[in-house]
Image (cartoon, rainbow, N blue to C red):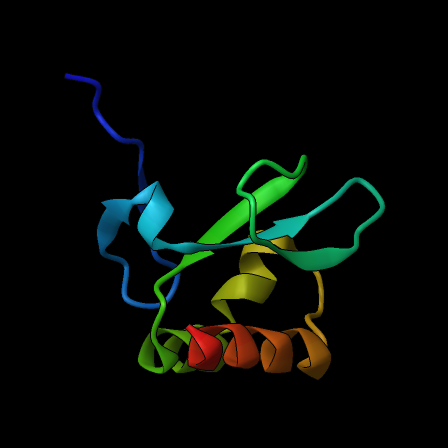
Length: 86
């Protein structure tokens, strides 16, 4: 049996299967986006599909530390939209 890759949520710090999490990616040019396919090239970070985890990540600035850059409110709003839509 093939094991599924595990990733850690940046909000709650729990390990889950990669396909259960939302991937946020920073590409070579420094653009940050939501990667729905999980295959975009660049540095990735994963977050659970819950508003609570997103709020924890925003409060602790975990995403900013992971990507070593300032994250705009627009990206956080896009993440909120993706989480609520699911």
